[in-house]
Length: 383
Image (cartoon, rainbow, N blue to C red; front, side):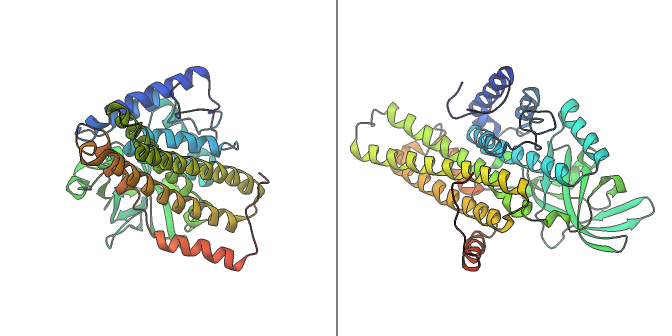
């Protein structure tokens, strides 16, 4: 088994071997995928075939009904290590299935879960929008959408998109979740010119115009405002933080390989940099493990919601800082030559630099500080 990929994942031997093989193939193909016109379509076909797309569904190894968040975070990290763009889309798939698990009706869950298991459908959650954001108005046949979403990761390959928008539904007004069948949306609604990033090109996070798309009541998930329910809304940041750390682990691995290739590992200055990289990486993994354990314990107990949000916020921001430190040390290790093609570090640094730019990092730190100011609380080891 490849070190650092799926250690301790409670999955069958055949599935474990299949997932590791797929992640190895994804990593080897990452440089090609960045420029492939179909993006990572092949990668998600492989992820379906090895069982990764359905791994969180009922009866599967990382069933959301089980306390398996630490293992799920390790899987997300492993996918991010293989390819950050694939990790971003995969995390969105997992996030969508979790929201369906939390809020969908039984018939909806059965229908969408079956699509994942039997058809290999890929799900995505797209919440970001600009001035032309989503609203829904009542129609004789249901509700008609007006507006667009931005940063729609995997827009060309996602089969079912969970989006949100303003609605007036049976007298209730608020932010409504709904599932859109992307196979029914005209392809010209995907603005392929809108995605010209520094990195994460293969994620295909285009702007999508959903205007005039008609949905029915069975496509609506929960009541207006449900999406913002805590602690799930903020605490879910630990999942994308896990993917970030996977990218940093890939940088660490390739940095060490580069130094070995040049026979520079005996240099004491390089040894010190490698020490710094590996200690930061280990710290990040400890944060992830603790975040996963707190999540399972406190969500099950229905207690410590604010503490969980504070710890998730800290996990997200601490891992961001860890990733930045690892990239800086890696830069010093390999110099300009190591940051050029065909070395993988060129792409990895671009991808992680861009992916780390998540919303409101400073406000996130302030929210965590407010928790400790308002509560006499320390995080103990009782987990």
